Image (cartoon, one colour):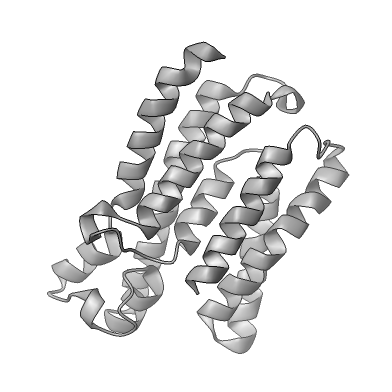
Length: 202
């Protein structure tokens, strides 16, 4: 696996740059608005919807999710083999580093002097890119988010609840799939770190 170190450096830098793309700010600028001075002052999809309109907020959410998904998905294509249960912990670590760089880019964008959004959409996209390890738990967490938002009408509440639920959902999925926590503990730790980051940002 030592031959993958050059890939690690390039992939992490590329993931951070992609993650740093501030789609919320771009959408705001198109409409002549600096989101940092409007609404909550956040550059994420929720504030885009609040200040500019729901359809633009949905577009921002989608774009932020895609920028989280793509680096992780393509890194996984390079790193994983045909047998999902035989992914080495070293390969997991590289893959997870790419995902973290993407999310960190969104939350601490160099374009915005290392400020950014709360990381919900980008984290969701990154988690869905870990097929099949995080995908089903990520979809379940998205379902929880939708239910909470529909019932209580608070996006932040849905984000916090779904983030807190994700590591638990992950363990349930792995148990059903018969996957060993000992084999995939780096991914479990990552899921907890990302969930905690999302909760702290809220």
